[in-house]
Image (cartoon, rainbow over all chains, first blue to last red; front, side):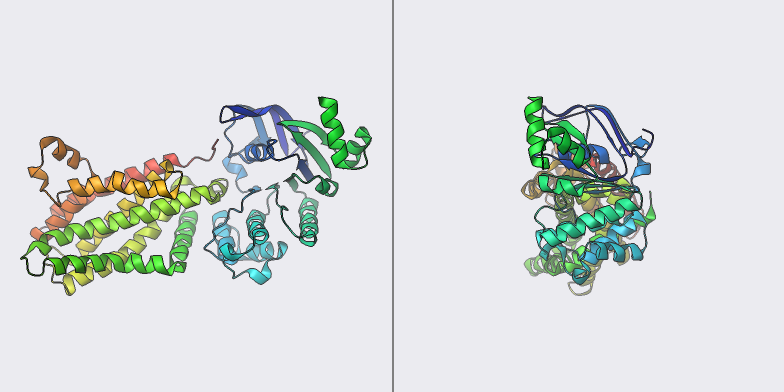
Length: 236
Length: 244
């Protein structure tokens, strides 16, 4: 598979003396891929390794043909952490203008990013005074600024209003349609149906890697949550 | 190194400072108020103000910038914004220089007010030029910024960051020659004093008050600038793109 955006081979990560990921292999291509699994299963650690901010104990992570974290990838990969990484004492627009200058993109990108996350009405509000969901959307807007080829999102829809959640998933698919790879983690199984492909993860291992329909069919289940349980029991 | 990202960081930090009115007011006014207090203390006690005043003009910007920078950078580390920036096309040195430029600018304003009031209103006597006094004060402030950036790497919480002040700053104040002339200290302490940056900052100020030639002042300033460069280099080494 030459056209994989992400190629992971034998990835091992140890944190605090405890192995979090052990000898993990993975390939992710274009489209919207969901990384689903319970809290603490290693999703965030895996995403950090893909972005190149995680110290790894072994294995290789290749993103867009280069080792993860290479200088050449810093323009091409957008990353949104679980906690909103924005400046609480700056307004929405000031935050975005700052990151736009760092990325070297024009002011038009700021406007497009504000519109994309539906925060145009709050552009002059100080980030620290926004609700949790609004702050995480500011953080998402920062990742959209550079129009990245790979967008890595760690639980971007947690705690959001269902209408907004639907809009964001539409946004992710819109980004994927222009050829980008979008990798979204979630611990909520009902978001699985919104993904082109799924990676089911538990205790640092990938249980399944397929389309939602194929995973359900293989497990003989009508929803992904039941399929997940079947897979866990089969592996035990 | 990139001028674009350095400028972006400096502008952002200045916007943050401007937004925080209380911090801004304290940054600009506090050193001047303390200088005035010192002048008042010695109002009936002879020329001591002329001896102590310049040393304090070196020490105040150093302390203030050390504290402000170590807490701000720590916040940047703990909020995840630093990790985000380092995943972007942002050089580690650009990040630090941006901070140094922003706080250097604040220090310039702070020192201009403190020096202006001390010389203009409080009658501080100088043998050397006034503008050089302001230059020394700004370099001292940048020294505080450089050390603050460095120590923020060793603090997990803001409480710890603030504790670095008695640990790293107070000994320098005690040994800089303000209380006991450096030549009169026990040999060991004199030697320690010789390797502490604040000693040279205070020496530069002392030379400005007593000598009309500026050669000594530039020599001291060069030593302080060397410490600034070393502090920024050490600070850059503590910024890691990959963490566990």
